Amino acid sequence: MVAGLVSSNAQVYSANVVGYANVVCVGSTGAGTGFTLIANPFDDGNGNQLTNVIPASLFANKSQLLTWNPGTGKYNTAIGKTASGWASSVSLPPGVGFFVVNASTTPVTNVFVGSVAVNISASTTNTLGAGLTLVGSAIPYADDIQTSTNINLFGLANKSQLLSWNTGTQKYNTAVGKTAGGWAASFPITVGQGFFISSAAAGSNWVETLNP
Image 1: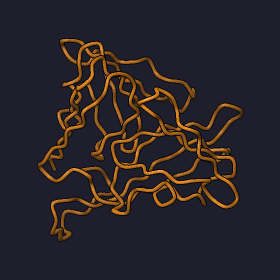
Image 2 (image 1 turned 135 degrees about the vertical axis):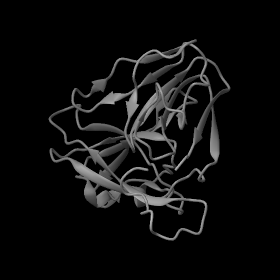
Image 3 (image 1 turned 60 degrees about the vertical axis):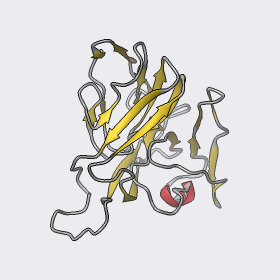
Image 4 (image 1 turned 30 degrees about the horizontal axis):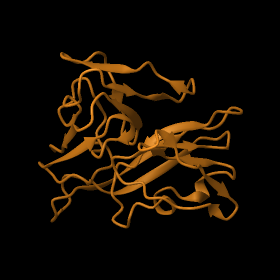
């Protein structure tokens, strides 16, 4: 399991694993920069509200949070950071990706804390609609989608695509396509990373399994 999950000698009496993950949001180097595409890898047990899982105190004023609306194929209205905190809240559950726009030149490390949303040795099925969906893995694994059987995206229709964000260039990386033979190229993701899935057909299943 990833660093930060409960230690092996701890006594855990539920089917869920608890832990934390440090996710870095890059600093801004000028207009149109400071974007990091992330996802909440843990369930905080309290609705996973923005105001709880990403403390406003970490971010400079004029920072923003952007969520995606798969129904409209557009971003929702940005939530801004002011001297009073986040202008509004929104639920950010495991499995949903979102952009954080850091207005400061200094990188910010957010600590996500909670329980893994998928029970040990169980699985969860996410049914994706056609088109773009901004997602994140509900399992805090760092793995490569091209080969991963835990973060399993092999059930998507051929011609589907995966799209990740490059914090260094502040641009999208080249999309990776799905063929009859699997994913066409390596697509590594880290714990707490968001990415786009462009599903070529409605009703495609994304099945994730937690195997400790």
